[in-house]
Length: 458
Image (tube, rainbow, N blue to C red; front, side, top):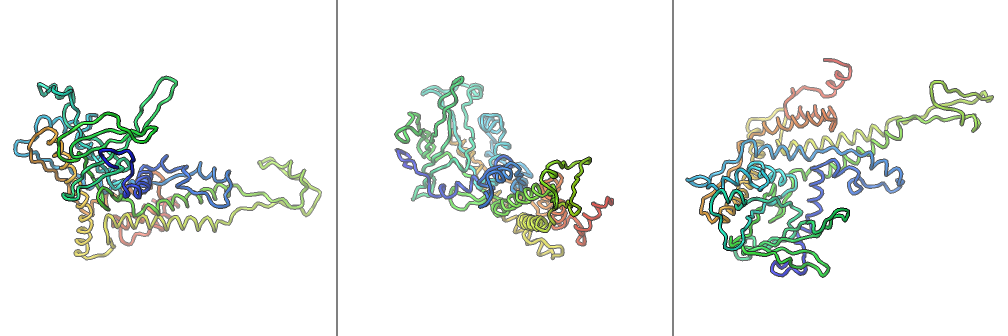
């Protein structure tokens, strides 16, 4: 899109390639209604009837493995609140207002940026727009109280990965030269008249901003435009892992294909059990009218003159169901192995102190990269806020990097226990995970423990 005359809006090629993944990562992280019952996540088998497929869709239940992975990394960098420094004199009164209410909706800075970093880990990347409301031309607030009452200070706005549809960089400096943020806004409403929505684009450049909307003849200006004089685009990227500029990769991306496969196999097993839960009666030697009289209940009976007639019940032997269960357990183990590798890349029951130090450095490298990226991004947000205020303040933000692999293991152990208690994973999976985390003895046998639990042993 040409930011000065976007009559033909075009998505950035990287956004076009990535937006389907953003939608997948968002849905798998949120779980529940975002996944269950949706055909794109639970495809129909080639010979499955509409009725049978409808039953499967209605009974689908998604187990969320993505959210715990995000929680581990997010908890790591937020184990301590970020350390913010605003020069020798400390934050100005206007900055104090932002610290207390970062988004003009009551969210303190820690809550706002905690949400921004969580969304970055869940979707791969998240953006923060630094904006400031303006008074009519020529009017200046007289006191800090008036500034507070009118909300005339910078504030931060969440911009999701899927909202940033286009951007460009200055070829000489490498700095962001423009950004286009898409949004759905209500443009008409009334009692019993419904609510009309229109797609709108906010274009930000280093000099100013403008608002465009989709109309009958394409994208057209709304007349809303202005200059900000910042000399930079007031948009900042928070990335979990940056694949390329303005494009990120989610913390749970490595397990997503397995998560979907477990969801689909769960559905197949559930439907197989649903179909096989009532044994089928097979009548031999009975006339049709005799069978029609039969009702399966404690007082039912059958009478026939055929002495060779008999009734048998047919039910699945269970071999195929057991194989589906085994396949699901295999996938669960694979998910767990990948998730644990994120926490401790080379965890073993017996390993040298040097190997443990290497594990810790590998883990810290990934967490540190996330923490350092968030530090730079939030620092950029505060510097843009200072630029809006016309203040020359040296700002720095440091996110927590005091993080140990053992703490990650403890956090993941807690999550495994919660998933097991909630019925989202099996007890076997939870016990094997706890053993893998070395929170159970090396000779611990999950199968023997499950047998004791089944027998009521303490």
